[in-house]
Amino acid sequence: MHKTVQDILNMKKEKKKISVITSYDYTLASLCDKSGIDVLLVGDSAGMVMLGYENTIPVTMNQMCMFTEAVSRARKNSLLVSDLPFMSYQASIEDAINNSGKLIKAGADAVKLEGGSVMVKTISAIVDIGIPVMGHIGLQPQTTILSEGYKVQGKTKDTAMKLIEDAKELQEAGVFSIVLEMVSHEVAGIISETVGIPTIGIGSGVDCDGQVLVVQDLLGMYDKIKPKFAKRYMNLSEDIVKSLEIFQKDVESSVFPATEHWFSMNDEELKKLREQIGS
Image 1: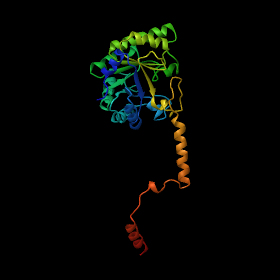
Image 2: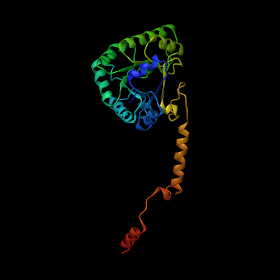
Image 3: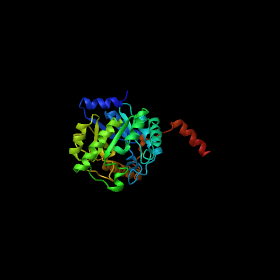
Image 4: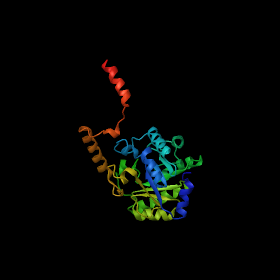
């Protein structure tokens, strides 16, 4: 049985750190799930990592459903949360509910959306129909980059207070956890102490209740953007390229395939074939 929202809430009560990995495909999600990761997040960052977009804005609901379905087939142990992409929930509460339902049907256990107090009514409506919601404040890639670019949030008293109030309002609206992206570590710590639900940090310091990274960043497979907060545990990009270069040379020199890599007829059948061809 895979983890539930209640399991994640209990981890905060028990002061257990929560591991979250953003994953988008069956193969890597299988490995993440097998490793014991608590939450698999199907992020709209798939648009950049998997589809090559410059940012998350072009990502569609159909794409998010496809990625969610792939990850849902892989997971056996983790909670699965999926992002609502840009403009799938901002225009109306009806849109938000309908699109949340699509992600649940695709295999998600919960949805994630960006925004503080402005999203409270929308979040309450989704939660009221029985769909768990993960909040997301601080840097909000779907909208913040349009006006500010990628900047640390909560560096002044006023912006810090706004984040703290947003977190409180999201909790009251019914979110079961909140992602804090690129929030100053002092403010992230205050929020984590203030709210009774788990905070999941990304570039927001060690005092959050959990941490999230994109699996391709963690494994060193995505070189286009190298955020400061993304710790690399491996550098698979180099290993993959080297392996492909060796494969190319093996093909060119006929080293590959070798006899152990192909299939053969038995001698008697081959003899009959050659006799027939020769006749």
